[in-house]
Length: 342
Image (tube, rainbow, N blue to C red):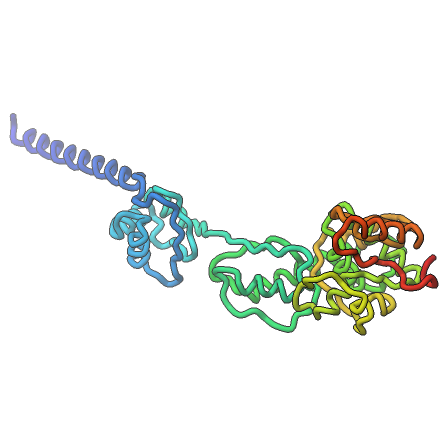
């Protein structure tokens, strides 16, 4: 074979060998990228802001999410995501591959936490939930009024500020109240949305049954339109406890005589502020109550209420409820004298 041909054959042989080696390297790299990770259980890990790729690799290796920090760095460079890795709290399923780990961090697919704020809590109770919520930062503001926070499920991420989440609750309540006020039923006894919010908080505390909300709202609306006192037990509870706790006993007759701007057995109209934070559904019920002529209701001992149009019928409902319950109910919305009956 001529020398030129020998040289050409040698070059071809070397190129083929390099190509085969490169192909083998690519196959090996792909195998390493897609191999199951070392962690056999789900891992939740916070990757801090400002951490470099080497630090991230060490943290992930220490948590056994990846097998080796150098391999993590090499994989990030190979996949072109080394400059796109984002801080945050991540949850890695068991045996996640290096490719899956890098894809999650590069996409910023951080863990979403949630805070459940039930309907009818006082602002004090909501703030306690916020203070106890994991992964939030910052202090809880003080001096908030009742009724200004919308009960809902709120999603957040690790490191979010409590004050920011609280502002979301306030904005959500303002938006809900404003939207429902715009479509309210005509003829309601509210001069402003704030008054509807007060009554919604009372209805929220008076029943746990969604199907009763509009009916109980109708009773209170009817009483307001007739100039009758609301005489809602929930307002007396708020007066007795100052909104600081739940009442761990039945209301007494002495409680009904407690001098307080929240005792609707003694005051006319609405109390000065809400007594809790009502949900969207209750606000909607108050702004679109059932059309009834009922003026009274009392707990019936089964979780619901018995309703009546007249004081005589209401007294009969109260007597029936007393026979069924170990602790006789306060005759909710029962006038203390006949002058208030229709």
